[in-house]
Image 1 (cartoon, rainbow over the protein chains, first blue to last red):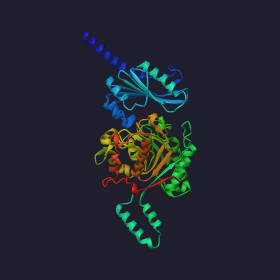
Image 2 (image 1 turned 180 degrees about the horizontal axis):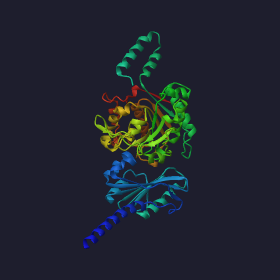
Image 3 (image 1 turned 60 degrees about the vertical axis):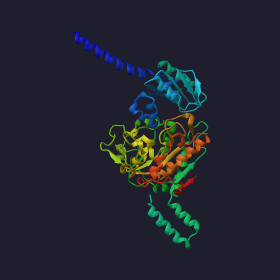
Length: 159
Length: 329
């Protein structure tokens, strides 16, 4: 009986870990309406490091060399018009996230978000712990910078 | 593609004809031996808000093809490019997302002209590796064989060949869309900066036709790009490029980096993919210089794949500007 209970406990623990991982990935992305004006328009896709090239082709190499474990991505739309994509890269360590953030962002404007972040007119990149988040809008409108910042705060709160 | 021997023979014939032709005539004859590349531009292709004018895209395509073929009427021009009764595959690029994917307006314009030239809708296949990339780029998936199809390798009924094909250093499994669905492929790549290869355009676009492209990324994709394009399953079908350089990324590619987005507002067409890529590379370098950025080579990303693609072993085309007949309109 004791061994049966132990076995059941192991199964429960494994299930919990599995569910936890899955929940963490899904939870990085705010649902529609959670951030004012933003609608989540696609399923979240998850790419393991070895499959990352399927999503970002040659760019995968820099993330792999920085220790990416997986990348999750989802599309959003602001007020039914402005399209954007949110990528959440989960790195093996916070150093990996720092390394990517510090690459090629010299012209960007620093912003207070997560552990560090930068903004361009149509994109925001920030890191928080082992997560590196990149949000890109596909159009430049007067509302784009503020809308992106709001979405970025929504993602940051989920990490 | 003409061999060097054919080139010299024709040049010699041209020289003998000098008595009856002007020097200009010989120059024209020699020009015919060059790889023709047309760069067609329209400065007003994008509106102030960055939206693509679909009608102007179609008009620009007509101008590019007319210039390339020397035929004013689009239908006559297209008949010189595509065969009758064959299935035409249009390999697009949807990886970077809508702003820097092969624009739907261009693909639709090509489909329209193909049909006017006598290709049936059921003989046109628009394809990419993953259906999600097609959808994110604004395409609608369609598997109805009686109509124009728009399909991804990852969809039911397609997938990759079980048997690999090889050339030089590469051994790959091609998509069955290329091997079993298409007779003749028109490549519709997107001109972009590339983190490894320097630039990605025509030749590199077929990384989207194989199962494990990451295995060909080593050493700046060299000789991966050239070797891949030499495999008969691809080389025998890939016939023409209509390069989408309406919007491009001059740094940070191949992913979409809006801070490095610019609008060359151009289509680049031709039969010689090496000459096309060489031309695209120079356009990216010019933009980088204009933005005060270093050359690709000085950032450790030389486009050495072009040299390999043009060498005697691969002979995929020319990267020699003296042998490229560049027509900018």
